[in-house]
Figure 1 (cartoon, protein in one colour):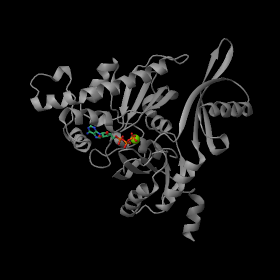
Figure 2 (spheres, helix red, strand yellow; figure 1 turned 90 degrees about the horizontal axis):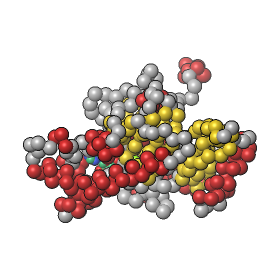
Figure 3 (cartoon, rainbow, N blue to C red; figure 1 turned 120 degrees about the horizontal axis):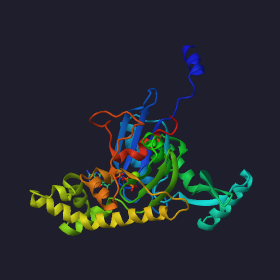
Length: 357
Ligand SMILES: Nc1ncnc2c1ncn2[C@@H]1O[C@H](COP(=O)(O)OP(=O)(O)OP(=O)(O)O)[C@@H](O)[C@H]1O
Ligand SMILES: [Mg+2]
């Protein structure tokens, strides 16, 4: 009886759990949304089996890991928000003249036909108007289009179900990142570029006053630094990654004096990879700058696992000539230390989990 009454008063439970299947790590986050600032109540992390999101999703490998996770953390039946990994979702940002909703839908589909090799009736297509610009008395809409093969979405839904998880929403990485750092960019007049740098991909989101101006995913990440170290030391990739994560450091000019030789060697071994990563980050900022009406970026927020590398923020800041920091988002309340403290590796999962909050 009591239960029935409660169910009437309290709306359906808000799903505030998220699963982020990364190339390096599978991450699950559960939030308690009944606080002014949501708190993190569960964090689960498992090494990702290699190549899960290849040409086709490797179901068996993924389900094995998810089974372990669901059993260990008692997650059976949990409703989750997730994003498709790999390059399964294709996004494009385009300008179209302002038109009726019906015409816009049609124009979006015509655009999708140009860049997707899959027939339209086998795709899910969504679009989002990011901005409206006036060009010579004409109104132009800046539109973000996302398209994913229906078969992939159904397959992902079904494999999560096999592991006992219910997928209630698929989100875009860019929206998750935008949402996570909302407090930082909404209250600011600055143009802020957020880079979420993972293992093999980086998501760039450029915002101003809470609006997303530009987004792009490009295929670079921490694996470049691992490779760079592996070549410099002549060790395999796995050992190089471990060395990077435990000893990795970028020494900046101001700290050069008195640095031990082994630290110098680590720094040097990372430089090739860093150069490549930075080149791609710069190129992405150039793509943005070439957009109509693009205002220069004032500031950079760094996120994603690669930003755990000590000295990375200072390095990026100097290389781009912009202030850059690994900012702790104010949208969540973090513990001071331990598993519920802020970890930039979990940015995507945090942002996804905030979707319905
Ligand atoms: N302390 C650290 N120092 C340097 N690099 C680190 C550190 N911790 C994690 N990384 C690196 O961060 C990367 C993993 O980041 P993240 O977990 O965001 O990636 P992912 O989500 O699994 O991959 P992707 O988003 O590309 O699919 C790896 O390259 C890892 O080596
Ligand atoms: Mg990731």
